[in-house]
Length: 398
Image 1: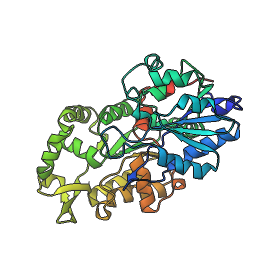
Image 2: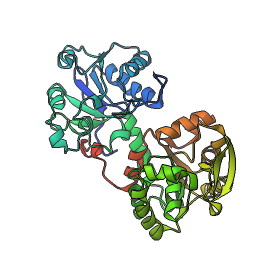
Image 3: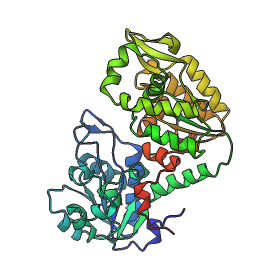
Image 4: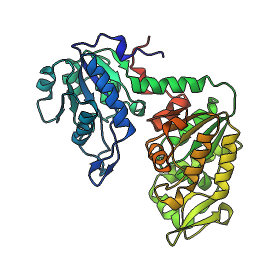
């Protein structure tokens, strides 16, 4: 581990700002307990036990989304996990006085950091250090602890803004992530496979390009909406789904995907068939027979078997993002079967992404079935692609 740990410091009586990632699914107004909530609660407990005054910073959702809510319910979950004095403080409260009044071992969870307009503005760490709320917090702190790889790819105020004011160290959740990724880098020249799916396409093409260029993967199995992007780049007409593509970012990304196929076409394995939704049921369709009036919802059975075969031939597998709409049982086949193949194959495996974690649970698979289950998605891929992560750049080196 090349970064200083929070526990390298004397924490008793110190005010510690902990950047966690409490971002969770919200179903009918209820915050679903996630691995992120549980794991970061362990960090909060450990810091509190050392006598630190722990101030938790995090976010939930994005402005404009239904899941863009406050962190009160998250704080309630954490209070139950740690069974220690914990106070939830809104930004409109006198949060400076609340922090100054803390006693050793006490915990404050500040409200959604993205309620502060400066949080997501594109700035350098030095510029973010001058943000109003960061200046107010910065002078109160003795140590900043980054505990979430999943936010390290974002140069947001609460991720990079505290370096001017205090030492910045790594927390145990992030430390575990980095250790697993360093082991991944040490795995040598075996057959390295990336299974890439999901629906979050922005930057994914660039990250995939980086991973192929720096040799972090020899082969890529592509599914989900990401797979459909590459099929479009090969000229496939999706018929009924073309209107959806037109409304989203496909038009901008297709040329990039096409360049990647031209350069690494022999390493990128695309679906040969798809599972379509036809009258509420699953129907298999060969890609060569498209377009169709039915909507693709999963990779097909034939593609699933091909991806499983490639998994069995690989010594190292990174899985990021589902192969289809796994929430619907009839379209969970691709994601479930490929994850099972990884779990039951003796390879070094890293599974990443919030959707992936939920998929594991729904399929009855356990984190211990894999070498490491990452709490990060995009940041995991960015780390592997060799692109520097702003949140790691500000940390103290050993």
